[in-house]
Length: 83
Image (cartoon, rainbow, N blue to C red; front, side, top):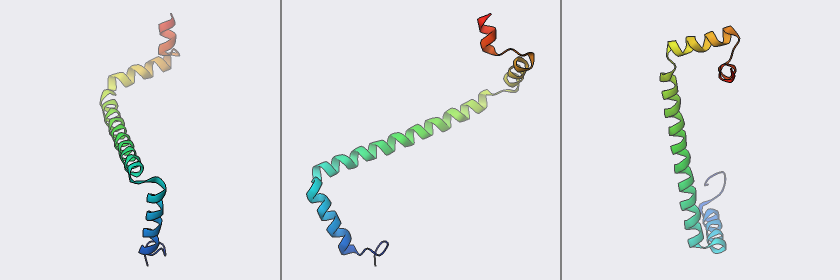
């Protein structure tokens, strides 16, 4: 028995049909495109993690207190910019 009750022979037959339908060149292009997409996704995830770490470092207690003061006073930073 193979994966989920599918034998190795059935998998080989399905693989042969896919190769006949699409051809090896197109399958190679699809594989490289999929690999590039996965690589780009992983890079974006790593960039997001690094940005989150830097954002956590930038939140010093002084900045947090200033942000809290503006909310307590009833003015947001945008309202201050308008005036």
